[in-house]
Image 1 (tube, rainbow, N blue to C red):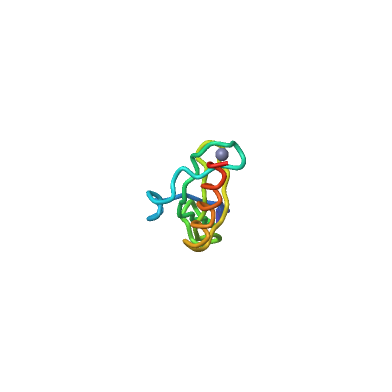
Image 2 (tube, protein in one colour; image 1 turned 120 degrees about the horizontal axis):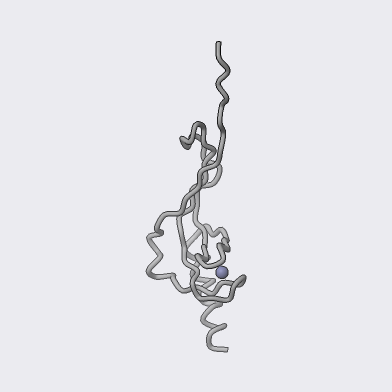
Length: 91
Ligand SMILES: [Zn+2]
């Protein structure tokens, strides 16, 4: 019997968020660019490079420049962020 190693890994990806067009250009507190947008985030434990077990499934704000991320749950939370941003821009 030959020894077959079981290869575990992690697979993650972002997909387009339906609210992206409404909530784009959010300020990034890390790199100070207005490039943050909402994404749908998926993270899986993979076995033989096949995603088998979800470890994160939800919404995040993501900055494509510095890769900063923050979780959010509801559209209200996004709206709150946008309101704060507008104050910031006017100041
Ligand atoms: Zn950034």
